[in-house]
Amino acid sequence: MTSKSILIIEDDPTMAYLLRYVLEREGYAVEHRSDGRQGWDYLSQQGAADLVVADVMLPYIDGFELLKSMREDSRWQHTPVVLLTAREQELDVTRAFDLGADDYVKKPFSPIELLARIRRQLARAERAAG
Image (cartoon, rainbow, N blue to C red; front, side):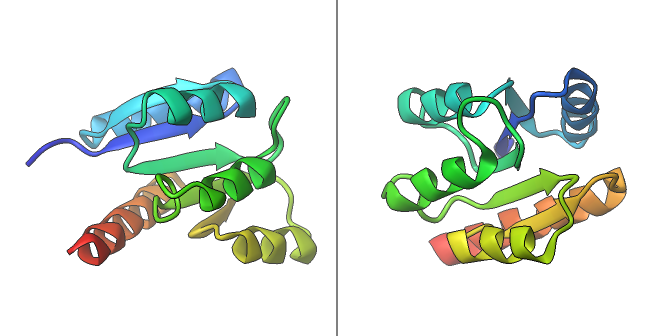
């Protein structure tokens, strides 16, 4: 079985390091970009991610705009997106799901729970692909 690839878009270096560490320990191939513009450029040019984990509050292009762009692009319409954020307002949560987020995880979070959510989204995407 090939390793699933995950793109992390997170501007906090400590959080990015933690995410990379946890995901690589589970055998995922991880790419990291530190702002929304770099994340979108990676997706547009490299075209390789089975799942995206993105912070909501990012420089240049925030997580909501990134998600909106992904859902408007046929290459990324069905790629699972897990948003991470410290924002807990009900309006933010509903906005994320209305834009097409597959999951919304509030910081601080349990790495074990995040892994379970990622596994669930990857399995769901694999079943949908046939």
